[in-house]
Image 1 (cartoon, rainbow over the protein chains, first blue to last red):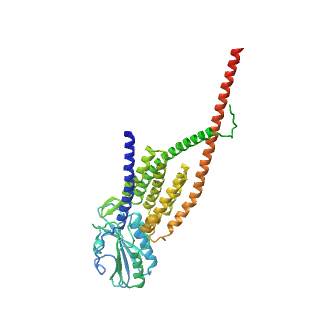
Image 2: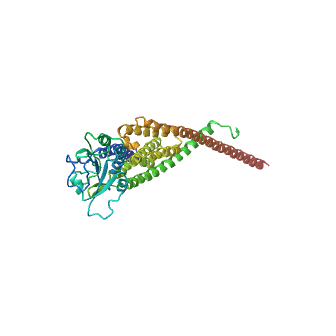
Image 3: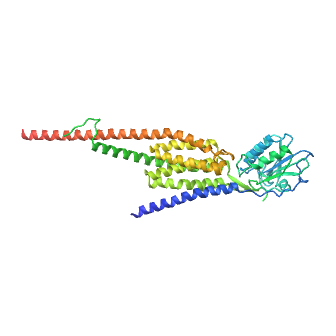
Amino acid sequence: MSARRIAVAAALVLAALLWTTTIGAMVHAIRRFESTPGRAADALGSWPAASRIPRAPGQWRLVMLIHPHCSCSRASITELERIIEHSPPSLRTYIVVYRPSDFAKGWETTDVFTAASRLPRTRIVLDQDGHEARLFRGFTSGQTYLYDGDGKLRFSGGITLLRGHAGFNSGSAEVIEIARSKSGAGSHPVFGCAINK
Amino acid sequence: MTTMTMNETTPAVDARAAELRDAQLVARRKRIDRMFAVLLGIQYVAGIAGALFVSPYAWEGKVRVLHMHVWVAILGGGGIILLPVLLAWLKPGTTMTRHVIAASQMLSSALLIHLTGGRIETHFHVFGSLAFLAFYLDWPVLVTATVVVAADHFLRGIFWPESVYGIANAEWWRFLEHAAWVVFEDVFLVWGCILGQRELRASALRQAQVEHLSEQEQLKSAALEMALAEMQATA
């Protein structure tokens, strides 16, 4: 066997090994990335008194923290839309959009922001340097809180099954169920980019 | 000296026809291997561009890092095309090269489908790829591609449905629906491959017969010239 033939065979064997290894490693890496939750909120049991988000007694509130540049949060917005559609019309939703003060004006205007601003019965709150997120003790984009009429926390967590994937999941199902029945409590892992490190 | 008409064949003509057909087929398949090497490269770049467009960065507060999908497109996509491109370059025209290319082309489809979040439109890549693979006129290559894409849809459909269908709660049997459309296309492509091979064989046979007739004519004219030369010499 000539030296060239041996070199070609060795290169092909190496490439075949790399081929199979890469495919396996790729699937593993994506799965791990998408199924690893972000840091869960260390939420208080009741509405943070210092928050500038208005709260009328007796009215249920849904609050979601969003990093406007987190592409995974498109799925959270899609799920939030589904929750709003299936919840009582009296439920008011606030999307708290993270905005660091040292970034140029308009930094927050992304497709995630635009999609959020189109949701019905929803108000956008610009959150300078994550101040509101700190009050709500949330760390991850997509973190959602449901408060009842007395300001008691009923749900804290994410509303997607994995990072960046919309679709039926127990998080959003729980929020809808609690908002409709006005009873119960729940939590779910949250998937998204970090807001406050 | 035996003579033959255009439509008659002899074992020698058949052997020459087979030789011509094989040579044409190998040349054609080498060209298609090269075409796929280029196509795989283009798809690789398109995958990276798509990942950069859809989700370029993951963020940690104010700090941005390249999104995992971009790394997957760069490293995973590179890994997928490495072996087929090397084979197309170093071993063009071989059966193994064609089958590895078929599997890699389907894996590229799988990667593109994942990178676009399971968009149904990206599944069209599978159907286009099958049509391109039919250029080989080698229907078992279509079987390899079909097995790879069906296995991918089945496994991801069970363990990771969001990646392949874009939703978390897809029915377990949905891969059968996708596979059925693939088989629907395969039936016609396999038929096309068989017809293509048949036409190639007929064309090679015609060429072998023409060559044989031409040889016979040359022999006849040589014999005639010799006879004329002998007559002139004796006159």
